[in-house]
Every structure is written in C-alpha cells, then in structure tokens.
Length: 443
Image (cartoon, rainbow, N blue to C red; front, side):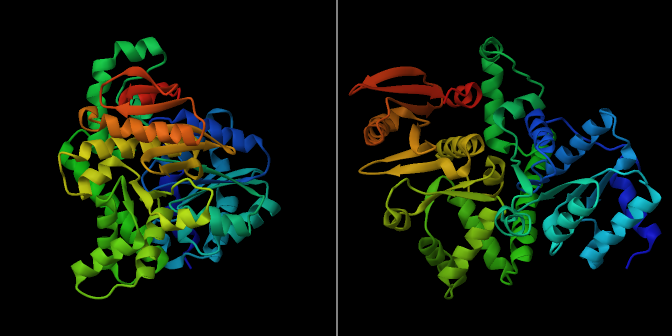
C-alpha cells in the first residue's frame, strides 16, 4: 500500500486545498441539475457520459461553486481514479486509506463533499460509497464513462439512494457559447444568422467535445478526436469488458462509426467483419461489442416504434455516433455524408432533450427518421432531408404516413436552408433549417 505521504502527493494536484484548479467554461444547465439533486436529500450523485465530455470539469465547477458559497476548500475531496499512482493499488482498501488520510491531515471538520472521478475503474466502488454516505457526514459524487453504472452498480447496492445525470458533448447552443456567441433572445439569433450558419459548419465537422472546441488548429482537433476514439475503444470497451481480440474490437468500432445514421444489424456487421479478417466470427461476439460500444457512449441505437415485440426484434436498429467530430476523424469521407451528419446531429439533439428511451424511428410502408414518445403518446414525427430537390416527395409521403398512423397534426422536416409551411391531407408540415431547429426548441 502507498505511504501517507505518497497518497497526499497524488491528491494535491487535483484538489482546491492543494492548488488552484482549472474549471473551464461553466455549463450552467448541468450545474443547476446537480444543485437540484443535492437539495433532494442524501442521495449519491452519479455523473455519467462519454470520455472527455466534460464530467471532470463539471465536477470541479460544482466544487468551486460550493466553495464560493462558503464551503471551506478543505471540506472538498477530489480523487482521480485514473491517476497512474493509484493503478497498482485500486481497491476499497485504497479508498479507505485515502479517506482516512484526508480526514487526518486535511479536513478535521464534520462535513465532506467527495468526488470520485472515473469510478468504474474500481471494483465494488458502490459498497464503499454507500458505507460512507450512511456512516459519515458526507455528500458523494461519482463520475463514470459507462452507462452500465445505471444498470448494475447503481441499480443494485445503491437502489433508491442515487440520482444520475448524463453529460454529453456540447449542444449546438453550448458550442456557440464556447465560441463566444451567447444568444439570449430570438432577436439575437436572427441578427447573428450568418455567423451561426458558419459555426454550424464547424460544429458538423469537428463536433462538440469541449477540448476539441477550445483548440484552434484543425490538424490538432483531428488528432485529439482520433485519440479519443482509441481511448473509448481500448480503455472503456476492450479493457473494461475483458475483450481479448483487441484488433477485432477496434475493427467492429470503426465499421460501426462508418455506418452512422444507418440501419445496422449484428448479423450484417458480423458478415462484414468475417470477410475482412478472413475467418469465422461469432455473431454473439459482435453483438457483445456493439452493446459495450453503446454502454460506453460511443454509439446509440434507436429501435423502430412498434407495439409488437416481434417487429422490434425483426427490424434492425438505426445507429448513431456520439459526436460528428469522431465520425469525420474515423469514417471514410464522402460528399453525401453531410445529410447523414445532419441526421446524426438531430438524433443526438433529440436523445439529449427527450432521453434515448423516448426516441424511435418509424417503419411502415415508408420510413420516418424520428418519432418522439412522451408518456404513452407519440407527439412528434421528424424527417431530416439536407437536399430537398432529391428527396422531398419521398420524405413527405413517409412523414404523412406516420402522422396518420399516430394521429399527429404536424410534422417537421429539417433541412439545410429551406424554411416554410405546407398542408397536405389536412396535415401541417413545417420545414426548418438545421441551425434553427437546434436553437429554437419549439419541437
């Protein structure tokens, strides 16, 4: 086990009582949600989302906010569980030692606000967290890069004792704010239309990971995105889930990213992988990797909306990638990709706004890109068509079919630039440019 001095040396660089901390640009909406969770009672707060989405900075921002509200910096403890100094000793015993040393040398007061960063690296962390929350006067925040925290660790030992906040790369509005364009009113949005459209092109190309947004050099942006993709695949998927065929896991991830905004089945992807590696590949292995990629937030898969389980199982799910920057850094580039990139951006916008469990696609005689379910009702039908000159007739027919199926009076077609209103069969179809769809939020 590490000596007391070594543990303190590892903690100092990450804590406000050790040195000033960089906290970045505040993401106010997330901070307010954490504040709300804290007021709800003695719940453990889990902040989860993809690697580099800003969870660490968000946790630091919250600590800084509490300190500015009067909390003694020594009453805060931030533990980076990816610190190389801790790797050989990761265990509940290490956490016991860290907490004991912190209480002896730093904080002899009663209350402690504790952040455990990237907690999925520590087996059985939830037992330690529950014990501290029950026995000590402490508020515990954990962060993690896998949604399995929701389904296994948190839903088991911490049932009824945790609240979860999902953090994603920047929304387009957040992206504009990071780039210095703070839009507080509709008038400001309209007045800055040209600048917004220019920045939308940048957002589509490089995405919304905060670190990438804050870098100016385009070559460096792409290198960071490639490294981020590798980190998710190797650390959050292959190592965490124990896959031994690292090259095959990476191949499946690359093929999945290349299929963004498309229907993808495990069997079709398995056949493609087998053709490339020139050997048999288990379909279960491909499905397990896809599930791990989704749990690690690299991809999202949206099912068709049907009241029949057989239909959901029969039709493949539509795959989207967490960030268009990763798509452009990893996938093959084609001119037709821009329409699919728009579809991917809309998918992520809807997932963030309504929750992944409420986003579907429609498959009848025709298809519709997105259906939104609120409660028991389907409330929205949305198509994405970047070039209406090629697809307007098809998109409208599909949208009208879905609107009739779910008794909707209005549907939306997201476009590159065209804006307008059309009535067909007593159904209202609203055409709206992507930038306006992302900012106005009336959908």
